[in-house]
Image (cartoon, rainbow, N blue to C red; front, side):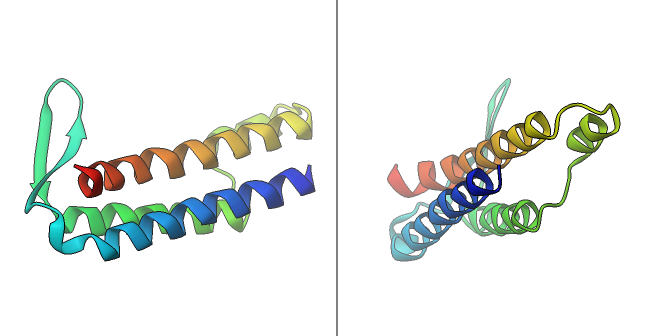
Length: 111
């Protein structure tokens, strides 16, 4: 599982780096008002919100890279679920978090 963890970290940091470069290089072409939330309705915010989302993405990825357990994973470990299942859940959550946050940033960059 350690090899899968390393591959996941490489992929997630690759996504973060690509997102950062795209945000930086396309900053001037991003409109001032961007979509920041999609739910019952669409919410718009300043393009500066993209910086906050990107920082949150970096912080989350750092926590996962340092193997910080979110509460869901801690509960799995307490229930004596196999360590492989807990690690697989961590990998899925890490990749999902990075992809979701990157999609919001990249939607503004690509639109």
